[in-house]
Length: 292
Image 1 (tube, one colour):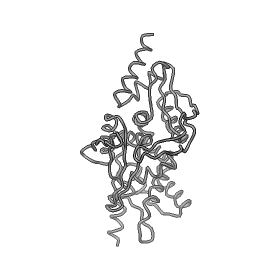
Image 2: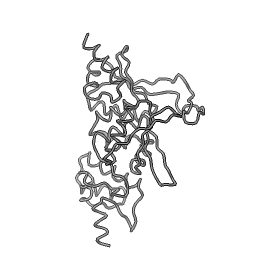
Image 3: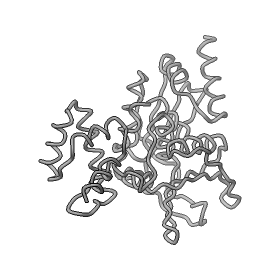
């Protein structure tokens, strides 16, 4: 028993009263530890705060291993997430165009992207693979029925994380804030566009929490913006998978708009696009400023 407990601790898991805690509960503990660390608390103070709030005893040494990235609380039971700019891009791109799917027969958990641009799907598949510790990239395949490039990876950990992020996108901030440029690139590849004639870059989303998240990341990069609430032109949506018509959940979209020369040039220098057609439009806009 002593040897088993030590092994569990080495792998960064949390065990209580002879059984593993649920996956989502372990993730919440991990998020709480990382949040307290960002506030400047030491490992012993974090352990004390967790004990007082949740009634759970965490070893300060294990907390240290979590914070320094030596171990993940999920150990080897689920795919681990490899921190880096690739993870920031994959998560942010998913917030714009991603889906989740589960194969109950084979107990597989899929994170998917379905998009019209092959280069976006290719870059997202490359970043997703690195984020999941995979040596080969996930390659896009063409879905002839829905006229989309589809790329997907299997990860119970990322599936659970993104399922929670649907309700609270801010839980992704610990994975994004260290790499704000790559995080913003993923989101603007998914949701962004360049209007050369109006000298603006915009990104649209119906979730104000998602927009607030990327406002914060843009501020880290020194890029100013404006926010607009726009009414949708079409209240109904045709699902490309089923052909059925649905009423949209929201009549409005939230638009994050970047304008003015200094902000456009900062965006081009620090963020940019992975999608060729958007990158070309951005280059045209930058040239207009330089000519003037």
